[in-house]
Length: 274
Image (cartoon, rainbow, N blue to C red; front, side):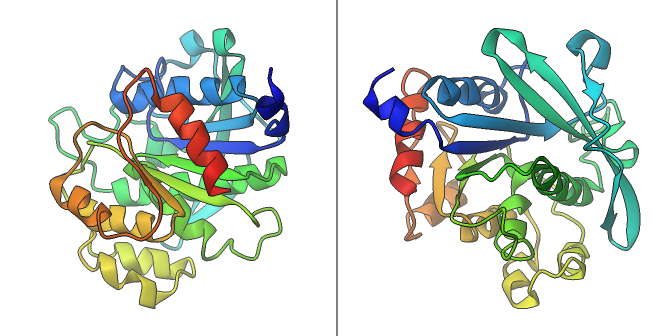
């Protein structure tokens, strides 16, 4: 490995992905969730990777097992306790582990975002809250301080919000940058009208929640963008309103990159933003 690879090898990148293949079917998002961490690791950086443990993931076939030392915490969502269960599996060919955020209430069902009839789950808002907080609390237990936190897909959109607000004074999360990747994976039904209240319950400043009075895909994405340090367009086509909005932001925005160039482009983006 050249000088540059050695120079950057101490950098740590936390990947938080809505989908990763082979645990889910192949989509633009799931393939990036799988091959980007491997590519970044091969370029000399240290990685950790997280995704939700959806009920359709076959634990035996994929050799998931619970990490007892990381499990056992309860997260309070909307004044109700929900046990946090952490599982892990290895992708041997990539020499990388994937951590799974699990909970019986939110992730045991056999479908991902919608039910068998294509109707989006009413509690997707709380599932996103639980996923975001579950990842952050697990990283704290690992005592692993990232330099870059890269969030993929709207299920990870609340991670930037929490890290820059209620976890802002945590010594583990200092001097790091958040990158949010926007994909063409809009949800159609807005989150419930009580969504902002659930964030406020967790200590998120109410003044910053005005933009999600209507908690639809556009406004949830804008909230993630507001709390991030850099944005990556992950799909060739994204929501047109969001695409227009990204032309107005003053932070770095990396345009869409195809499959042959995105890993190097993202790696350079990480280096330039630090």
